[in-house]
Length: 500
Ligand SMILES: Cc1cc2nc3c(=O)[nH]c(=O)nc-3n(C[C@H](O)[C@H](O)[C@H](O)COP(=O)(O)OP(=O)(O)OC[C@H]3O[C@@H](n4cnc5c(N)ncnc54)[C@H](O)[C@@H]3O)c2cc1C
Image (tube, rainbow, N blue to C red; front, side):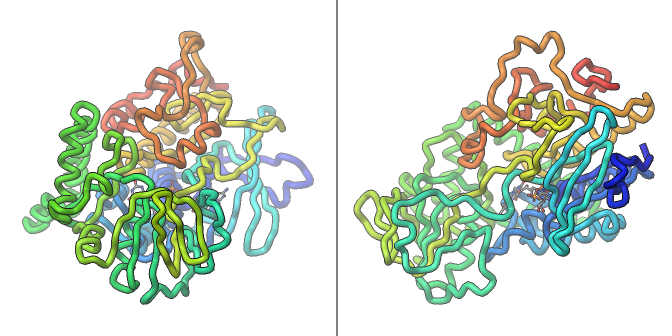
């Protein structure tokens, strides 16, 4: 595959060819690059990244306290031990990713400030043509590739999601979205409202609580949280025993994954007991007199939305200390001084933070086409949440929501490398997932079953996502515990893969 191909004589001088193009240098793209380099030496590849550096999520978000909400033993790669406290700051995660890049000489494969705008597959040439714009020079650049590995994440990095509120513009104070946190925002001594109660709000509130006059977390409905010490006992014990860090990483990962799997299964089988455990941990911080029923008891079953981990209960400690409070109500409209709630109560603020989530952008805002015809991923069916019917030589990384995203980065990478090796060995240049005869009457369903998992950004964008079937091959099942065994056994000669 290491052939430099000229697509058209005119563009050829500016067109570079790579065996593989990777979109994005977040945790997925850097992981993809590592696996290609180590599992497929000799493969030419480039990582194209819109931003000025690596990190993705951990570069984009700069709000106070920005940290992971899952542990870094499993959010970290399986091949690089995590040696610090499990919940990590964005800086620590970027340092870890930077080490992976440096230790594996990946830097020379990454082109920053390259935004991919279009990707077109040609059946005549069996190649993707990738168009990008350089944000430093404004120059249009073109690449061709045999295989396109999409590691572009799931939301638009350029802007966050803000719902439409009545009289939003009347508010005379400052409005900030956490995805665009101004470096010079002075919140010292100010009254702040944070709208939302997801992981971002739960991180921000305790991290600004000591500096502001008061911070109110305003939520329409409550969220589940897990809480505890920012430490993992088994890792601490093994470290005391001077066990090698690579072993500690592996053992701790297995321990966490086993426990997480058991808890997830309990949320389906016995949601009441799972709910009770989560709520009693909150009560341990806030005390029996706090109105946990109103502010921390969601109506849905635990795990239907992501459950953020609150290290050392810092959110609850800020509430207990009176520096932060929670209001559960709906916004009627904005006023000059703050927010009028549906209950008739008003909240005044100098600063309002809209921690209201993301705009789903599952394809990195890239205009896709096949032989010049626009490709709409919503018309395709997903092969295990990573390939799509009728779309040749393309893999997409969509991680887990209930477990750390990165677990799937490693699994998908093993699959891609195995697939590329198989194609090389069998001398084929194109692989396209297609429904098999036995799949043709299969019901086609939304990407994710809303009964199973239903955060707002997924529900808002579900119509844009590929369809799912009712068999494991045609679903992204969000179950690492099952996929870790299923993925290595994927039969590449199955009729779901059409080669030529
Ligand atoms: C604040 C926050 C905290 C989170 N915490 C956790 C956690 O603790 N655990 C967990 O499992 N998940 C967490 N998530 C989810 C998280 O986004 C993913 O786990 C993970 O970081 C996604 O990595 P990624 O590389 O796939 O995508 P991203 O981090 O989104 O990176 C994608 C990269 O692709 C680039 N890109 C996109 N489109 C293009 C294009 N057209 N051309 C070129 N480049 C492009 C982007 O600039 C970006 O750098 C969190 C998310 C947020 C927002």
